[in-house]
Length: 254
Length: 191
Image 1 (cartoon, rainbow over the protein chains, first blue to last red):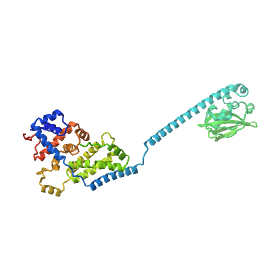
Image 2 (tube, rainbow over the protein chains, first blue to last red):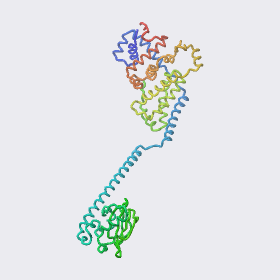
Image 3 (cartoon, rainbow over the protein chains, first blue to last red):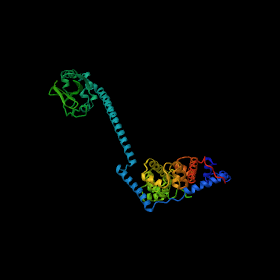
Image 4 (spheres, one colour):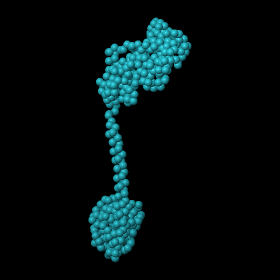
């Protein structure tokens, strides 16, 4: 009688997968040798040649498989156009780089604006201080920070941070009164030191040329930021208040 | 015994993967007979063997782009064919048997209730062996793979292959001898 262990041993010997010791053990045992003959007969029966399909059948099977490969390739190509993975990656990197560059540019622009603003503020302050002796004889000290004669009107208007801040007013009259208080006495103030070839709003919009500008300042009228321009002509001072779009808010004799 | 991998396989596989239809056809011709023999012994009849072979070839074509060469193409093709045959057997178990097929089987002397024949052919004998044992025996005795190769195809340890082949082969031997007892119950004839 043999068991599964014996069958494994005998089967392995039959297949040449047993060790020499195992093989010797099988051939030394008549029961195992008999079992070897039985399993060999089974093996030979199983290994009997298989009748293969006809050549036509084989060709048909192979042709169908090859055709399926072509069909799959065509379907795949139709479903999605070929994608160059490297190109897609390159485009993604470029997109990210573009966004990063744009952010850096914005940050740089903001920084530059802030730096220019700060520089102009310092420059305005130092220029006013440096020219104070020349103008102090004609202009009251209170008007010196925004004294037009001491500044280039164009650049002064271009950088609103360099204009004097008059404050906030609810009505035009309050604003006019404040300007009057800032202005020097009429005879002296009527002597413009130079003409402002153009006035530019804080947004950088040129508001046009003005002659005989004697005073400029920044203010808030009814909550709206405005620029106050005082000019003198033929002994008459005129106040003109414009918003940052160069739209005249009001104008009147001062 | 012929080795399962040939030197031409690598070049053919590479060309077929690159879309060369001629290479693909040559590769399939090279492996067709091996696949058919496996399927024929696994399924037990010509019609199912043709169906299984067709499915196996299609599966090879479908899987070819993913074949990475970690195993030989022959091993991989046997694995694909084996899985296809096992799937075919599972489908066949679920498939209703036509009445005329039952009548034909009964007329040929088959015991329909038990599935045991009075006269067993090799196909009938193999049909009584469970598929997992049968495939190990077929891969060994029909496809001539060694235990290590069968282990790679089936994804089991070589010791398991040895055991499955012994059990399957013993079952076939028992059927051929007209004895349905398990090897444990069988009396070994004395010398």
